[in-house]
Length: 160
Image (tube, rainbow, N blue to C red; front, side):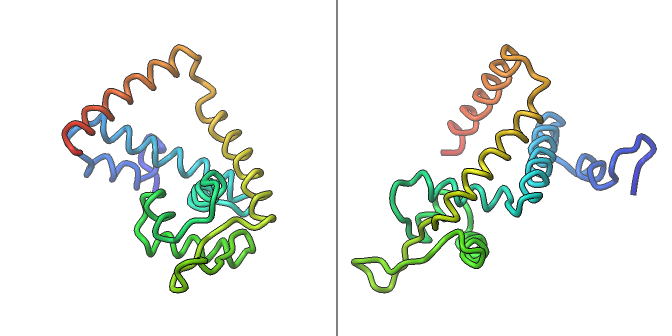
């Protein structure tokens, strides 16, 4: 449903029931919309943000990973990671191989097709993010990064 100003009702509801700080609500809303935007671009070629993140970790790790390690690196619940890996395996992009020293465990690695799909998805991701942030000039980008860094530091000091 649309509101008077054309805003999606779900977005308006999130803002009505958000946090006690409108800035925080705007940060969450921006990241949510950005994820939807990038996911839409990736889905045109059968990828998604979640699948790309998993492939990125596997591609950059330099060695096959256990499911638990992949889950930790992604910051996902183990069940979420299993679902992502199952879909990547079903599509021939990831394979599970027996761990050479622990026969109860499997290691995850990108297949040859998975490595090619990863490169293509990274290109799509880069183009989508460039389109999303293209209205910011270099000085604005640096300013935003600095401000976000200050917020991360404040949270890290109080939460870790």
